[in-house]
Image (cartoon, rainbow, N blue to C red; front, side, top):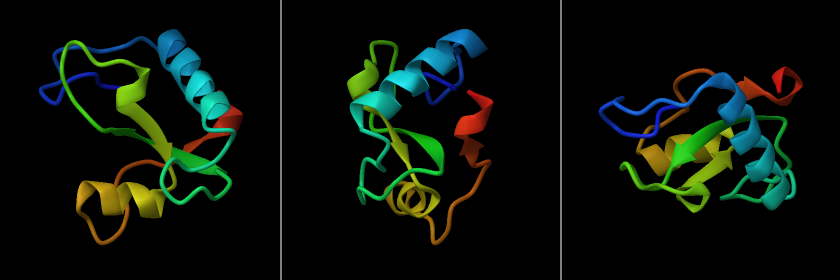
Amino acid sequence: MRLSKNNKLQTDSNLDKIIIQLLFKIQRGKCNRCNNDLISYQVHHYRYGEDITIKDLGLLCGDCHAIESGFKKHTGRMRDFLII
């Protein structure tokens, strides 16, 4: 997961897992936009920068991530919760 749009800050895989598990729990297993149950997800950055917090991130279904990012359909890899 990148923390900045210019890819300067990176998290490691253990921190990624913790952040995703926290977001999943905070969102009660629902997409942060459409509120449907998440089976697979993409991490959306509502804001980029060196000082982002967990409130600047959200787990979205592919369709909602596309809408939030200005695309017609989702791009990139859909992550599966079984990998966590």
